[in-house]
Image 1 (cartoon, rainbow, N blue to C red):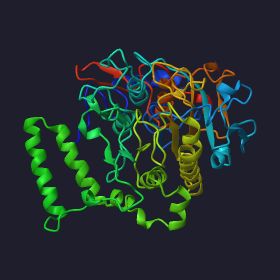
Image 2 (spheres, rainbow, N blue to C red):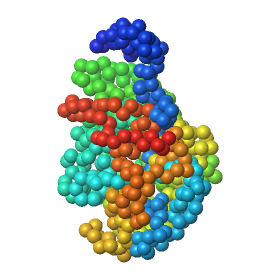
Image 3 (cartoon, rainbow, N blue to C red):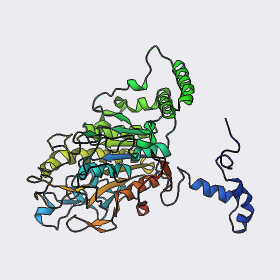
Image 4 (tube, helix red, strand yellow):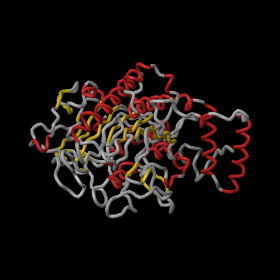
Length: 474
């Protein structure tokens, strides 16, 4: 039922009675009713500001679980000692003054479309292991239930929500489009799957739509179609009945699941997005016929279909022995250089360069934020024996300094934000916490930084534990 007066003395979604009564006095200082309404509108999700707030309509997170070496990819150190600089030479890019490692030649030709943040630094809870770092990157909060080892624990309903779930909650997609989709592979540390990936206290209706089939072949789309003996009308009637019963049982979250499922089936947009065979073979080859490359293409299709947040997880888990092949791990405690040169970087370089070019060509890059990042970097010194079992030619975990790539959504391409020291060990200037990055994501997507949600004890929670957006990127 439409309420004219709304709650708590407010007029629908507009100003309160007190605000209306004081409009006359506001006019004395140059702020009349139009300005008041405009100011209130500017603070709502989706509003666009000059500093990049609200410029992005969707986001693609390329999560490189296992964590690539920043020194051997995005932040080469040619003047460091040999045991630090490694085997790869730096190469010039289309962005003046920006150099990449020679194993990323295609991205070097796209450098004017993206920025690099080279001064990210964090101290995860416990030992510098993957689990705690993943949770912090994915939720914007320190984990409260991890052991002193920093190893992951299984997800629970009491977890704080992932970035994707927050985006789906505060920037819901249009009906018929999934708000949060996770593809390519599940996030894993050892035997634990799903670290920091779910909605937790926000409720299961904001969990991701997960599709981990290999997109180099046909994807299963049965979930987006009805059985032959069921019509949309009959399904709608069932949902309406379930919703009526749900009001008496308090099953609101369950009802939202039904509504979302009906919306996806009714619109057919999501189902079409997963039909990769509709893409030209030449374009598919440009992305690379690998699980990661085709997942980057699928991410573009999902953004076109109206998804708000698409997370492409690198196929191998974060705590997996590096092995040859296109789907192997970035966790290169051993054989870092042949793994990166022959497998990891060619697959990553091709897929991400094609994605950025494709989004730009289709006019989508300006409204789509693209971020590529691991949970941390890797140690400057090669093969140094540590508690994390580093072997010959390997690099250890290194959360003290690392890099991310960020493009689109109003971010100015061709720039480098912050710098690491001569060894890539610590930030030299403009240090950035992962929570600053997450604040930047929300800023670009038009989610106000003072937004809050309630945890399982009904305590108000900020979207990010601390930090603020990097407005200098826009």
